[in-house]
Length: 107
Image (cartoon, rainbow, N blue to C red; front, side, top):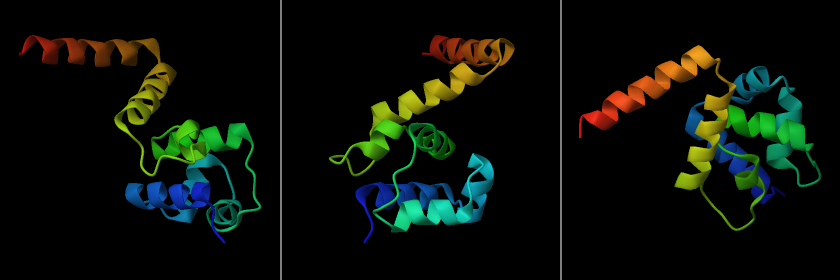
């Protein structure tokens, strides 16, 4: 029996076009571990592993754990994007900020 977590993981993985092998490679997990997360209700991932998998899928761990939500909303996606932005080196952050500033001036 799959869990809501497993269903969300599978959907997000497939939406990204990732195979289990690809997601395992990106996250440093085993394919069998990820398969169990998607297909068995008994697996309880650590917060660290769940955060790593969520980041690879462009979502948040909060979304995966929220029993009420069925698809990531705009706020979830923005939070995931911001977390990715914060991990960039300062020079890359500045480049992105400059681009956003230029786009804002077009209006």
